[in-house]
Length: 335
Image 1 (cartoon, one colour):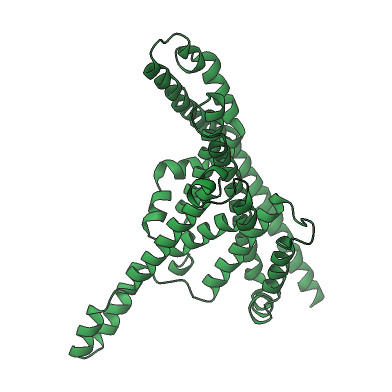
Image 2 (cartoon, rainbow, N blue to C red):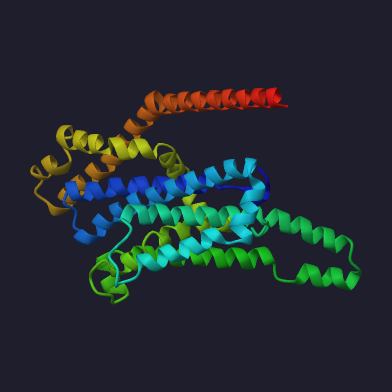
């Protein structure tokens, strides 16, 4: 894969891992009755599920476009770029969705899948048209080539101009943090306190899944910014690889800790007399729930999920090559 089409696997895994862990966090707060506003930790779990929907739509659409373009590149160029057919349909759907005079035509889940699909199409078009900003290494190589072929004065000016890479990265980096802040403000409790909006889902309704989708899109364009590096943290990437198992098995981890870790959690609190110790017992139960969930998810991923994925890939590839072989055979007979 070329530098221009670098897909940031670690960044996307990190976002997926953060989404999965946020769901676990939300459920631990509910189980252990932590002292947080109800709307805050509940919406954190909702945000995790929404990010999962966005990522699913983004990855599926992007992969489908890559496979489609491999065989029908001319059709993609004519219809997606020259005729702008798809973009017109997207605008129509946006108008219908936010028109207050008509009933809601899209369910919330469909809206999130649509948002992820739109950003996947935009990202693929940016890559295909070569509009992705240069990386730091690419810009250094370009400046060096221009400097070597330029006279002394031009060489001095080129080497002292502000780095285009630095300016672009700072812009994308700050945009990522700004979008992330607005996502936090979609929670009713925070939106009323920070943005002075009515305490309901008005910001979430109007912003919808596009906030999460744009955050992923801008992160993919920013490449090596501090926001991308933060989400490329090894723990988040590891959690992203086993995210499906985390979603599936975290209730088992929470139940196991709550029932069998009697020295901490709800049962441990009853034995403590000091408030500080009660808080520590609850925090220990929350942290142990994370550890047990990750261990269970990793085992499930290794023993069941990954072998099944490999088997499915093997069957899919064998069917694809068999179908392609039959097509070639029929074409030979036709000619």
